[in-house]
Length: 316
Length: 232
Picture 1: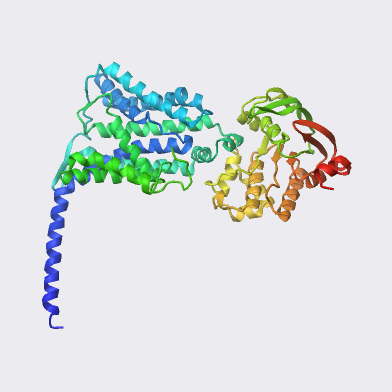
Picture 2: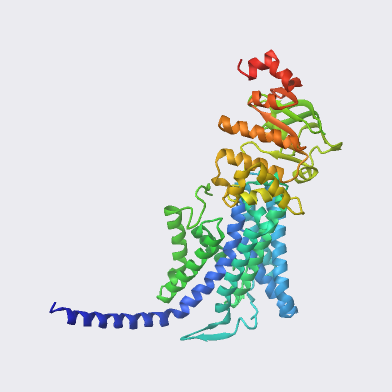
């Protein structure tokens, strides 16, 4: 009883001290946290394409990262000759078109083939797109255009960043809400869920499964195109292999969240984006990529179905 | 209404259906009975183009529909209640019904009320995912889903499979009720007793060929049928 007052005081002092330290920590790491949320949103927009295609075709679309890269190149070339209000729709439309054509040409003819064949076809498309890009660019890094408004700088408390850092998470969340509404409350969304359950029975209901699958690729490519504009705004240039790393990270995010699940992919992407950047903030930049892939290994060992995955999928 | 002529279908490298011909007259109940592997399912599946016939002709309302796309055939008014029910487990009961009417663009309220009248249980459970229903309820949902396309001909592949006798009786009551409301029915069954009691016309299929035909009552009385399929 006698000892209580001094103890109480020192406890209060300690709390104050901790609070000061944590404020310090936040202000020091705020830029990294913001960057993490932003990169997470960009990964999320790519990861949705992986997870939706997997949900319907049980295919890991290895070409998805390269479609993301092609969207960036279209932006580079289109912005050289057109104003922004033409360029952005052009990028969206042509990326969607490429996604659609890839599915029709490289995946649809293999609908009844073993799954390994279609996956190898996807790897082939990935290399084809990279090499086409190499041919078109001549192997030179292409300067990515600054998109007015989102390329501008802005200050948030102690942190200075580009507007895109704020725009990305907001836009991502809006697009995800829109997508979830489409899937849960429209006729085409219902058909997508049905086709993901069972091809043959969907066909019996009169669902044109090829149109539904095309729709999946169209949505995935559209989101990848949006993600591409946001992602490359933070980078100076595009090279033919630019899609590989963000593509892989987004793939890890999709697996982490539970491949096939859209909310899973989005949450996985934000977690990976934030962790990577916090690690950078701690001064271990060299290990930030390694962290993501170590996470993939750990997830595959500990919980192969991911955070929100189906319980009984057969793994690839 | 439906006329199948000399249908041959290969399934998994063997000739599963070896030239069968039969007819389903309008407003009738026709049943194909036979043992496992006799080619019953393959026959139904090839009518809706889930299997491609090797040769032969399938006509529906005078139109040759052999090898046409499944969605086209469904739009002409044929529907199949597949073996094993195959309801969509992740869709709610209501969504399962709605997707049954996927081809239609008109208002579904009347049809929903119609199938809810036939299967009151489905109305109670309309918000539940299809996968959470019991086997009997799933079979009801599969039949109701097929009815939602307003079919002229409904084909059922072993609707009684794996269900308790009381539920089987309920399913057959429903089949008679649907028939009374003007839908033509093609039924395949291993439960030959129930099927023949219900049907106007029966065909016996053995190893890909039709070996016997007659009215339901005739086949029920036939000595060979009784020995082979009715266990008497």
